[in-house]
Image (cartoon, rainbow, N blue to C red; front, side, top):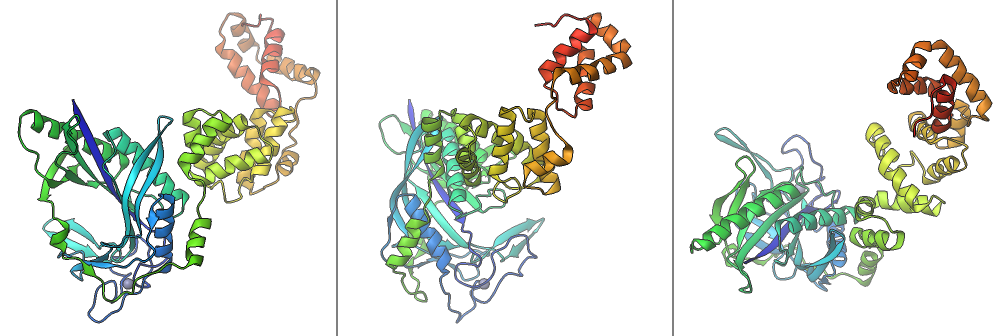
Length: 477
Ligand SMILES: [Zn+2]
């Protein structure tokens, strides 16, 4: 039996307008080397100044992760040479990180789990190297962007747990609006460290894995690495402490370099930036910006509303979706209906028309009105869906307006419906004949016409019953 110890080192690009030590804008997708200045390029004699919003978001993250927040924090120079870092040092934090010793709770298959946070610290990002054939090109637009590093304790016990934790972490940073959480564009990046040891023997030799661009890669790379280390152990061979790269093509990790130690970086306090001492007002602003976090929300939806784990997760995962769900409920939609409409029709419309739940396209009160009208049979479910779609299409926020425009009303009585059905049957005697011969496919064909003729206002079950009666075919159960 072996024990697995996994820790994550997560980097998030903070959602600040400008970079962390200069006023260059932080936007991606620009022409290379157009968002740079003497400060982020590290020219001699320049003076960096800290972005207060970056500090605020760092303290907010620290607070959300239950860390002890620094009462005084400063920056250190981490010295190393690499072409993507023109200064030959990175401004980072070493001896006074923004937060230490916290934890994050997350849900794994409905069960609450806790992972401890070693520390979180603010630093600047490096530029990007683009390798083309025999050349390497450099784009410094990203250099100096605000980056927050979050280091967990090695407490995750399986590759799946690491994947679930990372997804939950992503949801948390998005909820706090600290980072957009996009792993494909590199706004959220993750390195993993893993060691395997015999049960009860504690940590083994740690191997770090880099180049993990999605939570799925994190799991796959860790699975591979756990197998590799277990095999070495069984063969009595040592595991070398090193950094390895995940190669998605080969599905393997490859040795990159043996790990540097902190002393290799010759850290020393950054002389150009004075220490930061958060004021009481600053810390109050941090506390008042905290909101219910996704894991807590998910758990509450399960316990309070009796939702399934899957539905609770879906609703709680994104803050705007969760808030919309709660607004639907407070405006009078029942819990189950609110969940079903968000997961079903609203998700479909969002996919089709690319709007967000919080942008006012479909105000929650309007959806509550439409859902209530299906309950009182003023609208069929089919019509209700149509009303919502037309509201989006026409930019109308009052459902009553669309209902009036379309003249939607539920068929008053069976008499009217019967008339429509006899007319349709009379015009399609062949289809009626086929149905009498037992070809039930033709029922769908005729039903389609009935629904079209009644502008979707007929209750499908009643219409079907009347149609079969008209044809003289016994209603099948
Ligand atoms: Zn700059």
